Length: 327
Length: 167
Image (cartoon, rainbow over all chains, first blue to last red):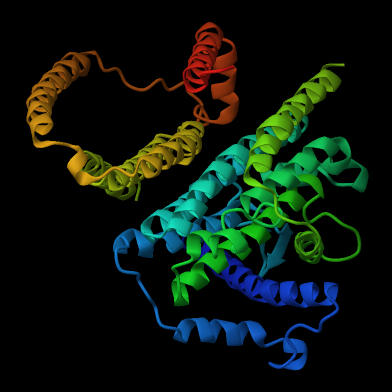
């Protein structure tokens, strides 16, 4: 009993530390990649090729003055960033990182908890994340923040529906809600669900982009119309928490897409964990690439696209999958 | 351990539920309702009803309450919009119905306690999981299940008709 608890604790700590490091270096990678897309060099001063830039940024944010605007709702204003970034950590609990390994004569599964309803758990936790943004917008007592918060709640609810429906095709094929089972079923590249559910993958990717508020769906923060949207009034560590949450959910979206459609940690020659990280890295770079390429949607386009195109397509995908399965 | 978790969740549930009613600010009420729903999900988990717990979070805490908050924020209610006269009438009916509800609860407990039987030992450990809940929904309870979906559809159509003057 005690060893189980200790093993679980060690796993949680290791995953958390790696996750935080990944978030820090994702900001560096994003700045570098964007810079090179725009024929610039990006951060170069702090460390070789700006490699220590994330640490400098973190320190800078810590030492900034923490401002709570007058007329804001103090408790909720403080609570909102915490609500945003805690769910992103909770998602990690059910994602399998690799095959089980043997350490000190004990076999250890590289997953924090093999919950047999992993996908549903992820949807439950992610759906709580929207509160952080909505409450931040409301409690700031600022028009732009409120508009950002309202936009985000409408956007996230709309795209959550298609997101959930897009995964159902996979559930029907795999017959399991456990992410471990789904990864185990994709043991060769031909069995990857991207080839068996291509439409679902496209819908999933678009909806995931909308859920993590990335360009072209970054309406909640739309810099040029809303200043910075829901986090306009935030500074210092609270601001940093929003960024932790945002980049964390970017990593989560990549991890979930990898697990569901690209075989998770499965791959030849290299160790499973390395494969997992490579696939996540590819997704993250793709998200950054999109940011360098696409303009932002207009609000009515966003809504019409979500309800008018993605939702019927997701339903159609379920329908086609069912027909093929019965055939 | 299980008892400790139950105790904490139950305390959160009771206090959050009371605060939902007592709070003056509607946004705070909504937030305490979310906390209460999450605590309730923990109680479901302790009863091994995992599917119900997760669905509780997805549907109630994750979707319906977001819409509640959304509407509250759009309306931006002020405190003085609830006049004092209305509160007098409200408190009269509130107390009346609270007393009635408590009496009913007492009656139900009194009748129910004598009819309690020990738990069915043939139930498998995973009786609250997706597979078994889904199976019973689509076999034993198929008719009520489909009927509910029609009811929801009717409600949805009604809402759309009300919201859109011109279709």
